[in-house]
Image (cartoon, rainbow, N blue to C red; front, side):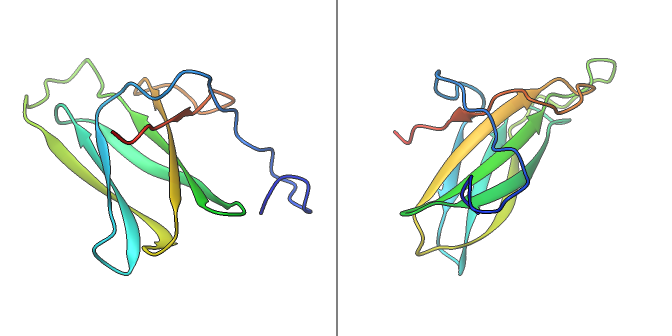
Length: 116
């Protein structure tokens, strides 16, 4: 629900800088859009925090967590496929934030992913 339309949830903070973390892509080959997050090693976690329908697109907000440095991780690319619940025919804007493994989510800003 757009901000100001009866939603009691505070809108997420968006950083001015574009996203600069591990690469992502958008898979629209099925009935719903799937965000593909490509982690540089094992131990990463990623989740969809929320979606928000705007006039001409749906915004998807994702939090990725870095691996715990106390544990050894494989040095291989790991693909995370995140179902968005958004129809593939809908325009999608993706916003991401990367947190430490033990960092509690709060008001940390999300950064817009710029498709290349």
